[in-house]
Amino acid sequence: MKKWTVQQVIDKILMDMCGGAKIEPTCDIISVGSPDQEVTGVATTFMATFDVIQEAVRQGKNFIITHEPTWFNGLDKTDWCENDSIYLAKKKYLEEHGITIWRLHDHMHMGSDVDYIYEGLIEELGWRKYLQQDEPQPWIYEIPETTLQKLAEEFKDIFHMDTIQIIGSPDMKVRRVGILVGGGSLGLGVEVMPMQVMERDRLDLMVVGDITEWTICAYLNDAYQMGFNKGMLTLGHERSEEFGMKYMEKWLQERFSDFPVAFIDAKEPFNYL
Figure 1 (cartoon, helix red, strand yellow):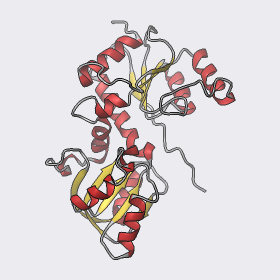
Figure 2 (cartoon, rainbow, N blue to C red):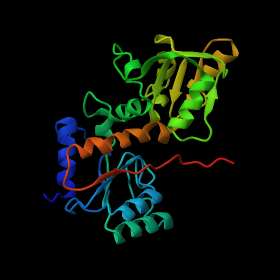
Figure 3 (cartoon, rainbow, N blue to C red):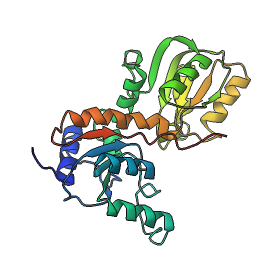
């Protein structure tokens, strides 16, 4: 069996995914650990929470590939928390157990023509046949007509959610659906983009990750209050993107046979009273 270092695994992932590293500057960095460490196993996850790290240790996997930050800020900077008790405790545990963490975010979303987070979401939903191929982004779906109530119940089951937020009548008819994962529903730098997508693509429902309450939320509340057949279903950032990292489990297994690869679900970050 071939022995792989962390850096060798990173290089092959980026080559197969994007033709090599191509985004600079990037948040796709090693946030803790060493590029020279020999890989005994890989865990993929949305976020390297302490529970995820403990599970990786239990499984004997010393390399975690996470989609989101380890150190509670977008670029994984640690200058602000070098004396922080939470940071120090988490870092100590990682170092004691020889864990390296690498973030795979920018290249998953923007490194090629494929957004791998959407790939995982489409697979989990089983909606590939409903994807509107004439759209430039994998956002628009035309599904068999259902109601918002029924779709919400299906999503709660698929995404393992106890509760789900909606705007609109539970009885409203839903056929044309837009999905904006994670921060995409904040507009990707264009605050009004989600509303423009709703109007341009004649959508009944927008499924969102993050929301700002004065943009798409307010827009669809107004629409609902004026009698339009419009609505919104909120998954949250984690639930809307986690399954991209589940998709990476199989993607990595097809490329690496010398060490085990497993997906560890970071799970929804909230409990509900």
